[in-house]
Length: 339
Ligand SMILES: [Zn+2]
Image (cartoon, rainbow, N blue to C red; front, side, top):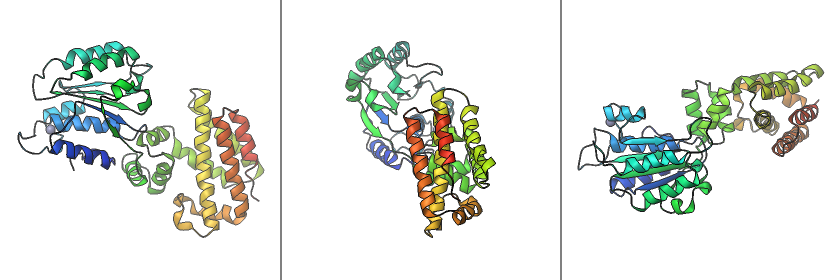
């Protein structure tokens, strides 16, 4: 396991194990794939492996030791032979000056070690002038240099730059990897980790983002409201959804997104109720909610639940088409009756 610090992404790890074993490292790579699946982490790990002071000349590369000064400098992103460029917070693009700096540094031979590595994260944000400057570097890269562009939008990379890089595709992570990460790193219990893994769309980054916004606590609030389906608490459910959407106030678009996420939580729950109706309990995701699942199952027919799922899906669609989110929530919640 050369890439021991990388989660999932076995195909990319196998490709590089092979490349490194045969000494066929190219000068430029494009790491492309969805947000939050570990592309940047993989690029930094590759740099660490190549720069690690414990590597022995003439023998196969070993995993990064994580202890030598070089590994530690790479972890802190302070290694003299590793330059990391990324989109600055509050900036919309990677500026020409950032690329010019890479141009200047890449032609200077490494002082120590054999390689100089440049990683550009968020590469889709490079300004056009920057791409043109990069193109010149890519036409005649120095032998010791390695450039890795990392992006979730390969379509936004200048085609002439794209064609000079070897493309490595990264896929969404599997549920097993996500579950174990959310359980160990975010300290969620197993059922919560399972729910988050289902809603994270293959992305650790997205799952962490959801959790930073109190997602699991919000799920508990929503399900609690569902558990008491009297008239008063029904309007309470709509208020709960709207209040959460507005709590982390950023933009109207952000509010809509948070309503969509809550609809997904509810849909996942009602889907589990439907599985219960058909005796397929072993596939239920909300394992920690068995009591509530049974209660709603008893109070509803499969037809009720199918209709509620349709309401939630129609609501999600309307939100994506920029409908008024408060109206969508109120409308959906008043149609979620099942007894
Ligand atoms: Zn090391």
